[in-house]
Image (cartoon, rainbow, N blue to C red; front, side):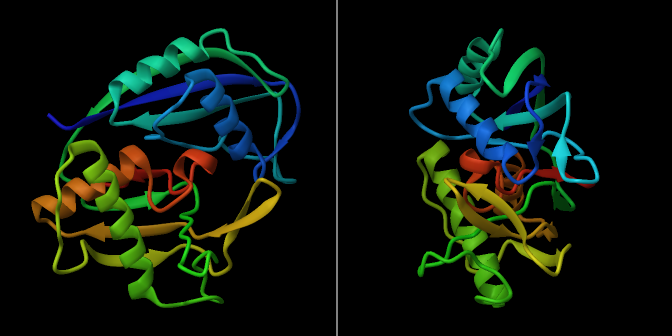
Length: 221
């Protein structure tokens, strides 16, 4: 049975963190705690920031993966974890099994790097077909990484897509700006489209999933 494991990690914040910078710091914590060699996970941001864009005092983020062994490593590494930014208070673990997905919405922006190393934006591209192609190619890569099986789609797995913001969100990684959009989409009903949609929930949409939590998503219905 296809399923993913989610860790809801509750932390004390030792410094006020801006929402644009917090994801990179979470990623560094996770990679240190989990001693990651093969990156197959995605995570959320710390919740709702204040009016100035900062997380204060307490927060929590969710971490997901189809790899239950990797999750076990994270649990061991995150228990009693503390660094200059975070102190882990407690962790709640849940499992979600594959089910039919009617629609998906992203909580973190989707970051898509194009061949020219620019991020897809309406300014630099605006080609919706290219946007869907980049998402689909990445999800197929993730499928093949897990299941070591090649798949091909003759048509896009998405039947409807809606961009939730006109101007891209900006996250910071290695001092550089990453541009992305929050989206809503409805997948097709065939088996492959549904599996790719489930992977978008378990491992994120687009690129930079492990680096800044890019494309962390939820099932709407």
